[in-house]
Amino acid sequence: MVSGSLRVALVGAGGVGERHAATLATLNDVDLVAVTDVDAARAQALADEHDARTYPTQADLLDNETVDAIWLCVPPFAHGQPERLAIDAGVPFFVEKPLGLDLGTPEDIARAVEASALPTATGYHWRCMPGVERAREVLAGSPVRLATGAWLDKVPPVAWWTSRSGSGGQLNEQATHLVDVMRALVGEPVHVLAAGARVADRDPELVDPATAAVLSFDTGAVATLAATSALAWKESAALTLVADGLWVQIGETSTVLRWSDRVEEVPDEGAGKVRVDAEFCAAVRSGDAGAVRVPYAEALRTHRVGIALTESAVAGSPVDLRTSDE
Figure 1 (cartoon, helix red, strand yellow):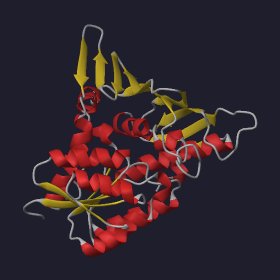
Figure 2: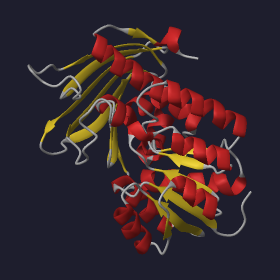
Figure 3: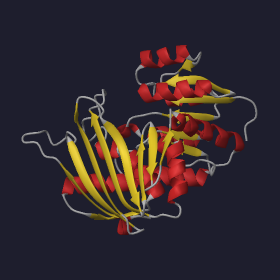
Figure 4: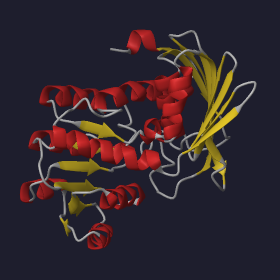
């Protein structure tokens, strides 16, 4: 348990790190005391905004600062060492999604987290959105029959995103939010089949410009999932659910629920992104590792589905998750 102000640190001062730093600054009794990034100037700029110190590496930071928690906002390809350093130092950590490019590293980290009993949290903030909470309530007595998810976007402005060895692809790096909400509201995927759009003479190291998938769930439900980065703008990211007599559409800014005789809209207004940080801070204060909606072990279950989808798209063959799950 922690009394008084939480002393927290940040690894990664890019756009996502900046967002978490801004959110943490709005929370009571939370002090961002240290920042590190491979880009020293970027780390210094963010640290200056929050009256924090900078360090050349995460190891230097942990050697020289006493912190109650650390946020790991690193790209998909960089996972592994940041989590291990936090675990070895006995520091609870919040890690951004996805958990990596493969299953081996996240599986190892999950075992180490379980052995340490440290509180952890992950960047699956959609689960914290008020609309997702409301959807869970109304779907409790109405099982989902069909889910359709679509992430229609542009290429993000970071150099590593377009390569398979950098991001792992759009299903792994972006549409994982939709997979996570499917798991929360529909059931556990047991079978997936995905395909990627092919472009003649395109470097095979580049991620597919579009992907489409079909998923089957242990509840009997079925789903489709589509993603593209071929646009010059972000059109939408949304998940539509159909239950008996009920239609639900979950987007990044609001959720709409429709019955035959009424419509209900639940706005988000950024609540999910604040809650995901605030709930982890509360868990660190209490020492209750189970007080977080998507701790590392739960995020790993979503990550397994994402890896299965990615592997299916590359191989062009289905993946049965009942034989690959723990």
